[in-house]
Image (cartoon, one colour):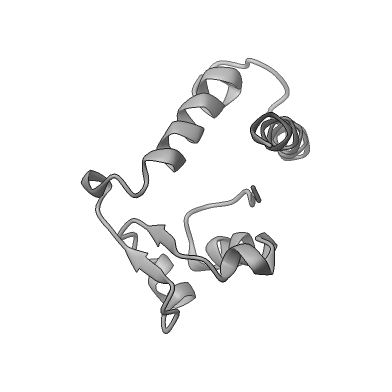
Length: 104
């Protein structure tokens, strides 16, 4: 799994896509209909935009549910831990490393 922190802009989406290993980018991929994703995946025959009711995004939604459950700082407005961007990035990176180890 790869990660990129930022807003939901095309720039952040492109940064995330570039961090995914090439062999995974060759497989089929799905995203919702967010307008920022269109320019990143335009012309990519292996990518499809689908609605959330299709079930194709369920594993992604499940992962984010687990992330919100394990890392309360993503859902709480009060100060659960450091609010610095660096600490959020490091915490997310650590969680992704743990998650990757857990699923392999």
